Image (tube, rainbow, N blue to C red; front, side, top):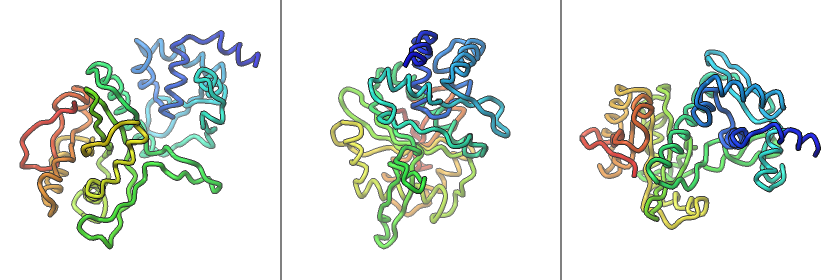
Length: 297
């Protein structure tokens, strides 16, 4: 306890916010930490070094990723639990077994966190309430060590009840404006998934969401976000560029499904998202004949 109090005396309120964010986001790059909490990279590096020396966080590098990535260590988790008024087991923090090195996994993971950071900042600016954000890795770890992902869904294909489609979104989140909740599913597409086949890749993902919408299974998230029933949802696809957006829209348009169903899929690309922000008119529907540009909120 004395050692823990000693660590607290060396920490600022901003440090504790950083620790809470590392608990929430799991992995953050230096740039992401700076965007969340510091006016400059120099200041971010100085406080990161202090937190590493206190045993609160640790960093690692991975091939082809040019900056360090940080995660919460036990000392930091203990501080987060204490300031939340709960025990460490209640926090459900798990010690990292090994530092991930897979480039595609990490780039995808950091892409989800980039979106989440923009979302949190945008909500503050737009006076939209973020009811919650559930990332794909959230779940319970079993005896075998495998994690049962909480947002993994299995649905009956709306066009073929004998076929079941399973999928885990990259994230699920809900927003509230003027007391009206809205549900969103997030897909970060890094351009590696096949586009033109209905049985795999992007179009399988679209078929999954269409079937989820028809089945109404998405209403289970009312309990998670403590809100009234949703009127529907939007599936957001953030991809690599304008050409990829156009190719995906063309593929979705070719699916033999109602036009209205295609319009609950919204797409944009990373550069537009980063430059304009999530709540600006940057979203195109999955119907390539729909010329409207949409905005969230």
